[in-house]
Image (cartoon, rainbow, N blue to C red; front, side):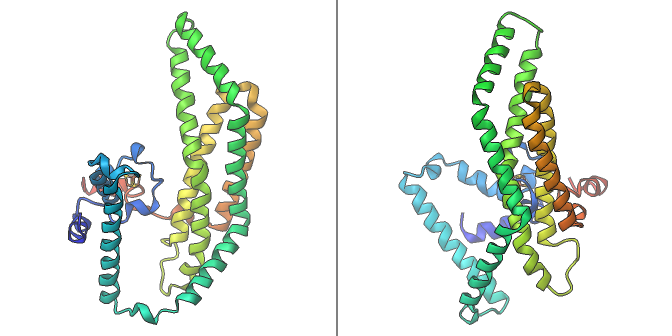
Length: 272
Ligand code: SF4
């Protein structure tokens, strides 16, 4: 795909502008795949299995061609906006970025999100044998027809909740870091919309990840009643993080994510 193809795809009204900027990147579970440019471009890559093979020469050739397309798109964009890339004080901008990142890393929100990430890793590591026991137990009940289909439903339920927890576990931290680092740049924009900022959008995605993780842990508590105490500790930590994010980004939940938060409007206007 060359940059003309990318630009013509980008102008296709089928796609919702920038929908992929404030989603959770869980494409397998997304209801907007047919309206997402990012997904469409990814599919084109996936059509060719060789292009995904890290050891395949074609992969590196493709990467080189993407690099060239990106550079020429960047040049076109800078020209359009009348920006001379050589006039930018790259060193100062780089220093500022480092400083912002270090500040965000030290912030109580990112520290709490990192702590959550570690708590979850430790929990899964220490409870590995419990999951094995649970699997044996469910298989035995299925084999002897105890409780009908219930063991099957329970196995599906547990797998589903583990998937949710594992999906959002690293993402909460990543999105909060983005919210904290963007906040500084958002503040510099004159005449900005106070709610539709990148920091609010990123914080909202983190909050959605937290909400869904809380729901999944709540269900895990029912599946694994013997582990209630440790699960409650994790839940309390997450809930505290949720409240702190809401305090620090009080308008985040009002941010309207392209597509996801416009469903009602789109349905009323019969956009799709
Ligand atoms: S909007 Fe949906 S399809 Fe597009 S990148 Fe996000 S999760 Fe994937």
